[in-house]
Length: 335
Image 1: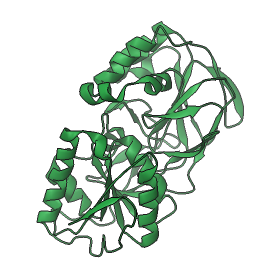
Image 2 (image 1 turned 90 degrees about the vertical axis):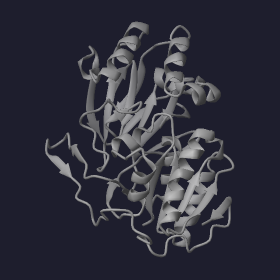
Image 3 (image 1 turned 30 degrees about the horizontal axis):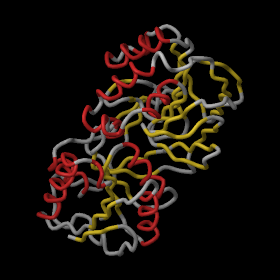
């Protein structure tokens, strides 16, 4: 088992990480810990681990770190595990992962998995994988301008503070895009793989993270009042009732060229338009806890991903052979 984490996450989050690792080590699980040194390093470490035959790579961090690790595992048979250490932990909420160290460790020593089908963004900066959502417009503008130190101190509150700061500064306008070949305009857009946004808040009820395709959330009205209304409705899970908010299923989205229009992927800055969004070539397998049900959206049926196998409790050596391949790059600690 290789655990990849960002050492700049902050002391409190690092303590949470080591609490999970202590439980694993106490139950005889062999693991290595790799610290990332720069942006993109998590992806490189994960890719190297997959090529070396490591069976499980664990992303210890927020949605951005998980997306980097997932990008490194894309196209491989290596399993993805998650230790949620981020600010919002949207994907962890989506997968209904526990927050206590014993519960997380128990999942990492089981083989209960579900497919996770990421999205791919192509822009002038290159290709970028995302696991939960891609935003273009005002929410991306907030992400581009948020202060990491403030985010570390205030947590989710930092987004509220930054939103209020940026409302009078942002130049609201119409975004030109093409959804499955149909050209349209909207005030803001979020291309969702998962149902949730900003933590446990419902954004896209018809999103299906286990399957290809996207739920495209269109915020037709542009302006301060519309942004405030959407922001107030989100934590009440009432976004679908806001006038001008619509959604549709799609397999390809193009945001046409518009100078300086920002994008964010999984809560991290992701450059500017123009850009194109499609599905990854196939799904990853991610370790989960309880059985999860999602509404398919297109067929209206419930997708019940029954676990392949599952262990009822933490078991020493539950995943034999993990971590036997050495990782050359990055700072690693073996237990």
